Length: 430
Ligand code: HCR
Image (cartoon, rainbow, N blue to C red; front, side, top):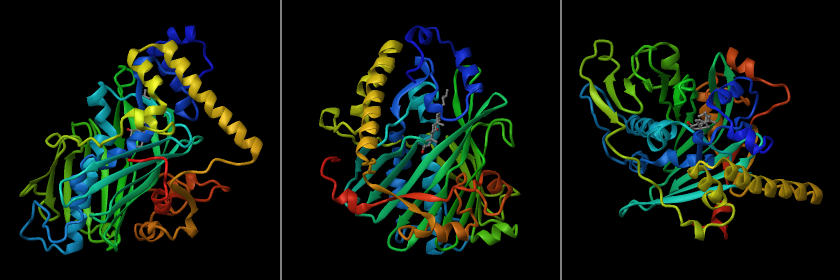
């Protein structure tokens, strides 16, 4: 980031930026961008997007509550009922994850690239008896950039954990991103769900008003067998609308494989309204019911401590000066403030190399897939016939895609939350 001089940078135009992206290989974080496309927010903050509708997350632990809308001709087991709550919560996370910057900043922007060990913490405090939902996010790797997170509500016995690595590629004037990682949701003592992350691309680059469009699929596999496949598409593909999706829910993955009729079909926009049909009625478009309206319920911001009370590892404090420079649109200042942070990181790494003490992650451990007895990933991925290798999220086991991504020397490892480490944490508070 610091390689070009500030005069070069001041002359930087959008066209040059686009040309740079086009010839760019590797990590987007090292790409110099004009100030107006820089976001003052670090990627560690993005973990909060999993729970900006905490009521919907908590509703999934629904003991006795019937999912609405309810269809008379469907038999709802407790597990199916809960699965529907989980799907609704997942759909509700997408607007925050992928289009909230368009609303808050006018377009998608290039987020700050977190430093190793950067953390972001916050909480949602609910009315009694719902307790508190905690969000912990940690940058567990800098090269490649990987963020791990844990979101939990002990009162409701709900916990979500996962990690994410975005791998960008540029081809035919298109910036595409594959996501590596997954999310694991645990409800109560027994119910678990594996959620895979969709691929995406950036639209509107030529017009200098970039926005994210999802493509590909997400899968949700429940430990009781229920399976959902969510197909994403944008403007001009099957529908005239951006941010569109179609979700089919089945009793099991094998029902999906055998082309059985789905139990439910949900379609619409993840940033707007979606509609649910029973599998019997979908083709005839009979008896549509509203599933979710993303524009009706505003996102609930989590509470974050004031910057003065944060430690130097906490995102908003660490990036304070850079964020201020970005808001002022002052490239020289952005360059200077970023250099301070980057130099400090370089010195830390050098000292670690010299002393032989490598960096230790704070709340997450990297676990080889075959030793991962802390999560049900292996069981759920196997149920969904998903690859256990180090390949993009949601890659099907044995598929051509899997073969394309497989590297001989890479074996899959996953970042897992270590609750004890958080319980023992002395320096970072909520
Ligand atoms: C691709 C992206 C960085 C990664 C962001 C991720 C994948 C991070 C994990 C979150 O859970 C979900 C998520 C949402 C974001 O939409 C996605 C970002 C969108 C743009 C950003 C690029 C690195 C920025 C490219 C620069 C453009 C805008 C000019």
